[in-house]
Length: 319
Image 1 (cartoon, rainbow, N blue to C red):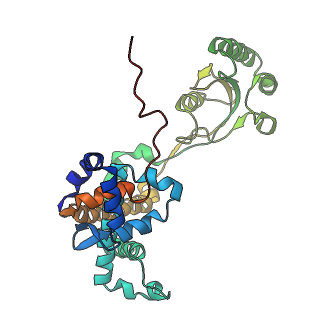
Image 2 (spheres, rainbow, N blue to C red):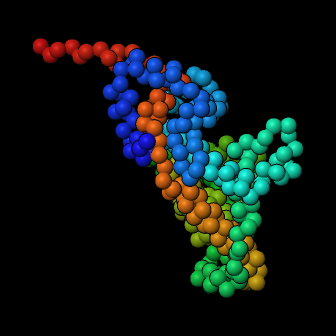
């Protein structure tokens, strides 16, 4: 038995160095209960891999198991699942009425999920009030109530015309809008490439909401101060825009008391997530062993990848 990382890194060499008939014989003789890998007192067998393979369409199995990286991932994930299931049984969770209500024993997958649910519930979380206050004070800008920011927009696409052509149109729209802002709706109707303009009339709400619009567009909208203001031509990755401010209300700073519960909940969730990661990392880092020949045989156990036509043909000699 060898360290699994070494086994899987050398998997391609093992499979490539063996003859096709030898690999076929290994696969044919492999018994379902044969142990492929062990870790933390649990083992993964061919039966476990066969059960996993059932979830993959037959035609896709050869390609899936042709990858050493995927094989390593499947084995390590199954070992983790079995270790968590073993912890669940040790804690008596396999006798939980919700688990034993069926006619068959609980699967390792079910027990592993139940173990993690109980682990999360059992994590002792300290009082996060002071840490929440520190987090708030360090980044008060993250706790703003974004004010209403509504604009009307003429969108000139650069996908259906050259950038130069789009810029000529956008400049003309800006010039007309500045001269006659009351006619902005007519400019939307005449020039905008927005496919939804017939129903929205170019109206865009909550433009200041983080991540809702392209940064260039949002920043240009925020620069408008009073209703009726017209923006310069705004360039985004796909389009050019000219917008008119319709409504704007100021951002309001939330007090710590208003956001304390939300910050505390976030910190608690992060604390529990960290505890979960530390526990699973501890299990994952336990000594792991694998049988290199059995691991290598997985590449052909579920069928061989069809060769690419012409891939094995010899190149034409240069004359």
